[in-house]
Amino acid sequence: MLQLTTYRSLQVFLVIMAVIGMSFALFFLQRHLGLLPCPLCIFQRIGLMVMGGFALIAALFNPKSVAIRLGLWLGSLAGIGWATAVAGRHVWLQHLPADQVPSCGPGLDYWLDTLPILQVFKEVFAGSGECAAIDWTFMGLSIPEQSLILFSLLLVVHSLILWRILRPATHNRLA
Image (cartoon, rainbow, N blue to C red; front, top):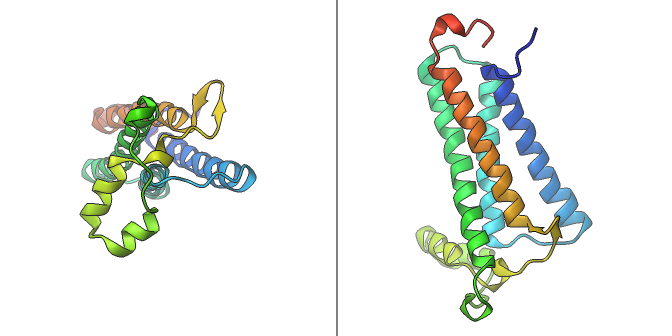
């Protein structure tokens, strides 16, 4: 019987979740509803894609080496950790009192064209009025709040993957 918590099946789950998350963002929110992503949303998407890329490599090649598995896990964790931190910052900005919300600035394209990359990161994380706007909700949750919940779930899955990697080899018959 196929176990749902094998190393490979957990990696496939991460890939599926990345595809679902990106499809939801691109096809439903952006194309269907016409919502353009703010800079923080774009950074969250980058983190989700990084996680999905490392998980895809791990799922396709299913490395047996603990060191390679840990390396892929760290790359995947870095991506989803980044996305989670950005989503947390985004939620925080959305809950600021109206008089404390940063003013809207130029778009991300302008920043990338005119500023050094470290300054771009600083500007994005400072947030802007567009990042604090709540354009759509589902069950009372804004898009960043939904993202934060999803990313937190994916962090839990990463802890299960780490357990799978570090578990003694004699117990990893199906992994």
